[in-house]
Structures are given as C-alpha cells and as structure tokens.
Amino acid sequence: MANLVTAHLVSKDADLARLSHLDPELAVRAYDVEGLPRRVLEVFKRGRKDPWPLSCSLNRYHLSEAVIAAAPAFATVVDALRAHGYGAPGIHGELNTGLDISRLLGGSVISFVADDEEDGLCANADSGVLRRIRYRRGDLDIEYDGKVLHIFPLVPGDEDPDGTECILTHSAAEALRAISGVVVHDRMRPWPMLLHGLVVEELKLYLPGVQPILGLAEWNPPRELGLRQVASRESDGAMVWER
Image (cartoon, rainbow, N blue to C red):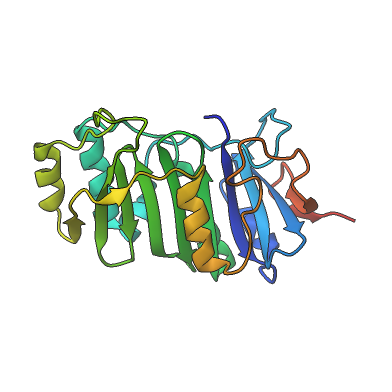
C-alpha cells in the first residue's frame, strides 16, 4: 500500500491513561499538530520498524465482535462482498481499534486509513457507538449512517473507458439488496480522482475549515508532518507523557 496514511483523531481533553486497557499487542503514540483541534493517535503493532509516521496499517482482515454487534448490516455487507469476489482488505483493524478507543476514552473518535489503491475507510465512533462509516471497496462507495447502509457503485474514470474496474455483478447487487437496512443505488457517483479522496471528504464533515492534514491528498508528502509527540504507550501498557 503506497501513500498510506492512517490515524485516529481524539479530543485533546481525553484521558489517554485509559488506553492502558487497549489490546496489549498494540503500541500507541499521541501527537499534537498546530492548528488541528484534535489529538492524533498512531496505533501500530509492537515491534514495527517503520520510520515514517502514520503509514502502517494494522492489516487485519476481519471485523471484531464489537463492530459486528454495533453495525450488523455493515458486517453482513462485508461478508457478502467477500463472497462475490471483492477480496478481504486489511483495513478493518483501524475500524476495530477506533471503536475500542472510543469506548475507552468516551467521546468521538475519527479513525481512517487510505492509500492510492481502491480501498479506504473513515469512521466516527462515539463512546462505543458507531455513528458513521465511509468505506471504499473497489468500484463501490459505501456509507453507513448508524441506521441505513447506502452502496453507491462508481462510474469509472477516463483511465478505464471499458469499465473493467467495475466488478459489481447482477447477482452481487441482488445479494446486497436482500440485506435488511441496505440500499443499493444506480451507478451514478463519479470515480474519485483525488488521492485519499474518501478520507479528505469525510474529514471536512468533522473538521470544517481545516485543510488536508498529515500528508493526505499529497503524492509526495513532506517528511515533517508537523507532529509533536506528547505521549506514548510503553510495553507495560501505561501511557507516558513526554517532558
């Protein structure tokens, strides 16, 4: 996954000490960014050797039991897509972890992962409740608002005039329509041209007036992303603040 950016955005008032109860396999770094009203959490597997911040997905393919319980229609759609040739992207770890973080910290947590390929995710969890999920799988743009799940097949761009990227078959569409709480729309939504476009669009809902951050929408992001580390999670699980 080239040009990958992933993070969790939390309130600056959140008690990060509660993250000691997060999955012990995960390490956490907390950053402040000038001009950003939220704190940035980088969550990654312990032992990772990657000097580039916010660029390592958890690479988990399955939804957690907590996510399945919180958004059963979404979980059913994910399974149906896998059964109809959409594969299993490794981007579900960010959704699983974002929901866990929101439960531990309380309040809203915005979690996202995006790259230059055809999969991406941005979700808002609030105190253990999934309020919204925006999810890209191949030629599908999926929006879940906590009640109804909308599936928008995408119109291919000029680089794919024959529509070879469109893989939603009639049988797949019918299987999705049969799921309670799911609406499959006609193929009218344009194929996104902007790098990380799904995440950039979603962040405008939560951070109005804030320009793309953390290297989003940049093919060659600067090495300095304006991150100031304020805390990290040690091997014993405790959050330690920087001096």
